[in-house]
Length: 350
Figure (cartoon, rainbow, N blue to C red):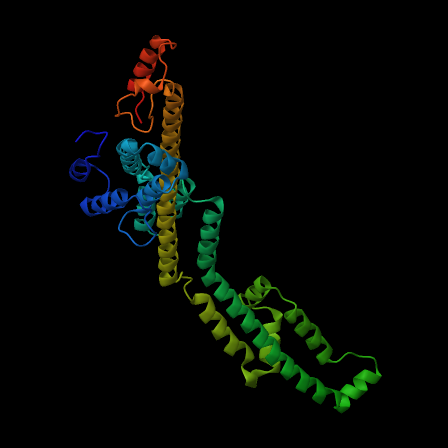
């Protein structure tokens, strides 16, 4: 059987690089039945499925096959060529090996901000926002121990203020009711509570660094508290807490750091895979469109030739039939044109 009469599917099954044997069998079945493949109902890959559907469901191509059924094998040949071009496209799609290497390096080298920064900055798939977001999270994690220490010191400062204020309130009430306080006030002399109130207000207004400085040194407020409230041990008690907070090692949470890096690495790998898939889709779409356009162009060429041959050929629906010379007056026709058409037909292949 000639190529014009059939297409050798066995050769396609045995030697084509398209998919695997099972996939090729499914493709052959779809083409033989000349029906689109429904999504999710076949083992045929999406790239091949769409290319097959583009052709078998195309109105212009189907009209051509209906008019020229003997040329269907050539259409099938072009479809198979398109599938093989798609396979070649998939095989030659950029694999981003250098990017994958950067990603593996990032995962395998722990706690080296210099190397990590270089790997991130040379990435082909990570956006500026991706990098900024990761760095911000890493900085937050690195700063968390210091932040925890600062919060603990602030809480200690507030405890001391609250404790001192309570003691001062009781002292002020007691002092204001004493005979000495009444006499001093009558003479316009300030009592000791006014000095303490000023000292307390100054302590309340301390910044975090100011509080740390006051606790690490031995300023007047410490001497004052020890002298006026020896039974409450206010200085000794809080000095111990302060020392404990300051001596706590500022270590980053190892588990949280590992989780952060693991999550970012996973997102990076996904971006690489998406980029590879995107490149494949772009190239495959290009191959599919070019295949359809090539078929359209050949179909238009054949229809044009058939139009020119009408004065000579009785039935142009099948080039294999004999001409019926009695139905066309070729005596008044330039036969040299017929020879030119024959050469042109021989040259045109779908």
